[in-house]
Image 1 (cartoon, helix red, strand yellow):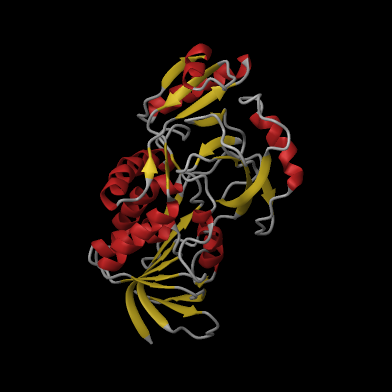
Image 2: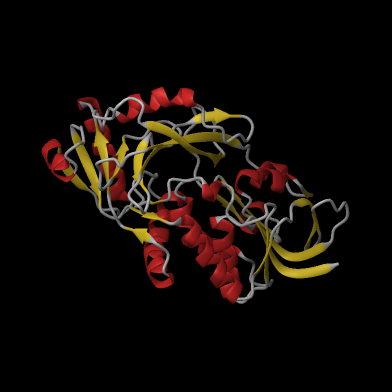
Length: 368
């Protein structure tokens, strides 16, 4: 049986960032990925936005790690050549009733140490002449990023520090020992790998992986929920230079306009609660998108939207429930010295990834 110090399960943004942090700390790391390449899951189906840290409850992990991660991410991209742009965004109130919602968002952002500028309707239209709103908040620290390029940079630094990526390796079962953990990979019924530490960064499958650990306390595994978000794009360029966000809706941040690094606009995501993993984008949802987008861009013409892609958020709170915080559960919370589980790492996971990795590294027992 082969032995390794640390196994990271999942090679999305979070798994790669964690593997990099552990390898740079001198740990021996193998990254096990079930797919045939890194970053094919949640990480490849996002808005690719670098978030400022505006919306999250003060003191939450999302708030703390988003702000800390953003402060790490821009310099990382500049140093490694990852394509990105700090383009800024406008959060818009499209009715008088939503203006009060903007004031609450502004207060929450200030509580998180995030600077926003209050804009009148006229000031917002000076920035974006095609925009309809009653008022807006301008976030100068919001940006966009080439997520695939970012993951390549993370993997490169992890591998330079000795980490190994092993694709097409699906973890089936795990067994707890006194001070190590055994793993069975792919179709093996018996363990074929022993590790001192397993970090579960499996995203949509994180609760499934945790449930596969024989002897792990079930009360420390949350229920998983899936929220699908659809994206549409336009064949022609949209007349905006900044990201445009509505007031948030339950389950997400509402159908917003983001820009890719070539300046092409895309719209989404909406929120659809589903029971099975399914990335279908139904044309029937386009009508809802037209309605939502025209609240802030009334000039959008019929027939302009085309399906782009869908992503699925790995949530641990369900419909009608308050949004759950990130769960980063180490030995201090569940009592198992060889396991760290990451649950519910949805937005702003990409922005927070470097800070999440540092947080995980700090949870690793010193004696290992």
